[in-house]
Length: 106
Image 1 (cartoon, rainbow, N blue to C red):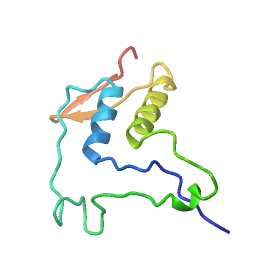
Image 2 (tube, helix red, strand yellow):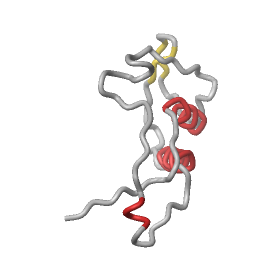
Image 3 (cartoon, rainbow, N blue to C red):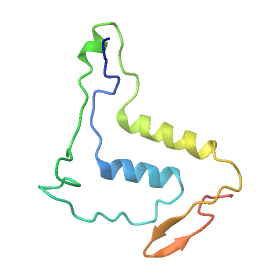
Image 4 (cartoon, helix red, strand yellow):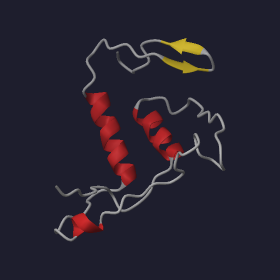
């Protein structure tokens, strides 16, 4: 059995992922809160600060990525928002206040 990494050739930060998800879900005004971490910015011991998959092997077969990591996150978030069932309840914590029915139009 052989394995291939399928990814974009770039990196994206956790902060940027959170910003994209906030924008796509209609929560762009909610402040992001990072609770610290360890070892110079890692979330927990053993966590990676940055990750970039090696896609050279897949490229040797003629495969090439068509979108960036940022665009992939954006498209996935949009897809989730479009495919939510009307009436779905969402619960999040923002400054210790529980928000229900947090999705626009639901």
